[in-house]
Length: 239
Ligand code: 13P
Image (cartoon, rainbow, N blue to C red; front, side, top):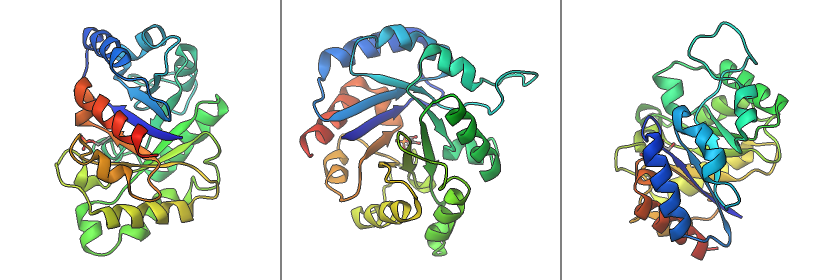
């Protein structure tokens, strides 16, 4: 099984979601790829109806680790469970860097998701400075150290180098293979590992052929339904 996941980030109204999902369901019928979308919270609850009885799965981009309480602006695992999410993204680089979520907080989020049986897509990745100074392996190790024992069957890890996100620049295929294989070495369980960072219709086939890559987490290109469909087909063909 391979995975093509689309993270819409802070994009996509409810109207956009309805039109997009209807088009996507008409456009692709993947045989060997699991497809999931991660829309913003306002559109998320409608996904339980939009994707009903289809191959399409859906997840949240973030979550807090308490079940309820005085945490203005946050959404809890209980709320996500209620709408039937298939996944929650934890530790996306934008959460780490813009919203200053640290490794300890992310571990609590993984534990909270597990308490409610929500599979996690746990994101890791080095900055450009870290790559330039040869610290990539150490950074990935540090980001995984608190969760490597608790990530388990059903969970997924996404390797997303920060410098490749939204930049149009991707690592070489060798660099992707090396980092993914290092992440797999660090994990205790045998989990799928996805690549993320400027994946598009032009590089999807090449990335799908890199050994060890179990799929992709797509940002910008997942907002264009035709392009996302092409990426899904690229992974569906290259099994
Ligand atoms: P882009 O595909 O826009 O580079 O974003 C990748 C990403 O952050 C997916 O989570």
